[in-house]
Length: 185
Image 1 (spheres, one colour):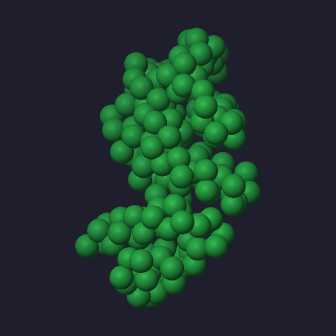
Image 2 (cartoon, rainbow, N blue to C red):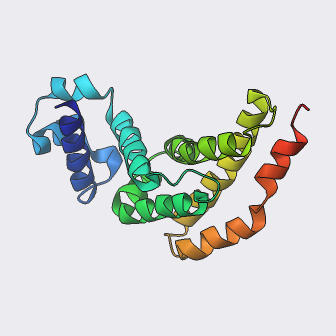
Image 3 (tube, rainbow, N blue to C red):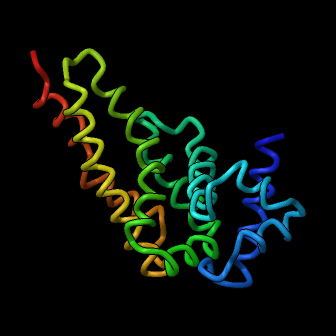
């Protein structure tokens, strides 16, 4: 029942975002649209931003759906771009109503879910410190989030396929090379 309620709250928020900006939406608006009381909202989320973050993570999980290997990371990233594009009114509203840092906070877990599995797969059999793996993930996460933020700021005009294809050309083989250079033989 908990997931059903969370999804209903998410749907209400996304519907309300089609009518007004995020900073004008209240918890009362969401609960009234959803047909639940405020305490039910607070049982699931601490505030509206918590609901936004949960929604982003849920969308990412659906988008990635087993596309978290080295051979499929491009498809996974492309699926994230498509998920963002499908939720354009939601994303653009959030983008224009909150700070860049908060938007980064929403997007980082999306890229982290993709990167962690790829890095673990590529470092299999290598003795790479976890701190080094985390550092590599952080670098790639900044690249992916920065690219996505620029794309969102440009009103998502560029074709996601071309964007991901160009990124793949630039970073092809760099992850594996970095892991080998950081390997403790």
